[in-house]
Length: 380
Image 1 (cartoon, rainbow, N blue to C red):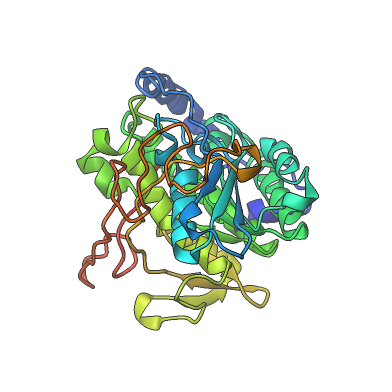
Image 2: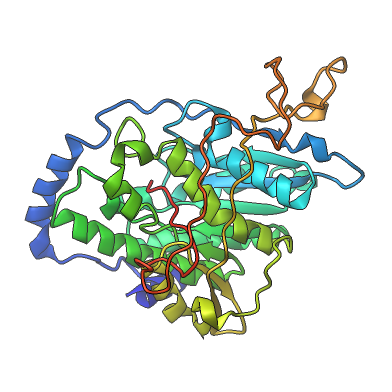
């Protein structure tokens, strides 16, 4: 099915239905019931996390430029502090690994579907002198909930990846999360939501890899933790991730984000002990959709690398520092905290934002996760 969706997106095919018409009546009833609970709280407007991170690493090397695109998950809706958003967490982590400052620009829009990526890419590429070095895209959940045709969804995503790659930016796509992990969604809608989400995620992987991007499956990374601690891992509206949930998402994406820039200590060499393999891209996409946290990287067509990168503790999250060109001349850019806050803290000092310790799992108890890795991810 993922191959058919991707082929339809590439060659202009029409909509490919993911669900039979017989399920419509049941689905409508379940959707109305879920709507009474999902979003029952109020999700705050996502804080702006744009700015410079890792200013303590300032030196002769130019700062890395990181762009973030997508929907409410990429924007960080559901938290109130800039340092809790996925953009801030990824920028802080990238700065710590590269030992260079990182300039973040987040153009993600809450509620966005894949057809909004054209506008977002245009915003990022408007100034050719500030083209991002690497971009992260998190998109897909609203495509499913708003019944956007899967072929259209994948076509919009692959076009965005192609434009960014043509401009010289590396691209990492966090594929559609598993909507079956949302607590107020009941059976059979939960099963159908999981199936549709995974099909779209696999098709996104095929399309993105073919355009030169890498993907990380977000899938049901939060599944086990969500079942045990739903109030901890989801925000007050029962739909968007909490600060803890965003930390798990960033922890899953950061290794691939660093690897695509050649900063991660692991290479793309396959490790059989970690169940890594070279597979046809469609098969790799299908496996990745079933196993959250899996990276898919294009190799020699039609092959792709299936990777399970080791995750490490996230560095202490920091608030954005204004760019030097917009900062008053009398204010030195030496702190790791926000410009308006008097307190300054080094990058190595823990702050209040949560971070996740990776957990090693016995080889016989993977629970759908790669051996030796922690389970992490927010559902959208």
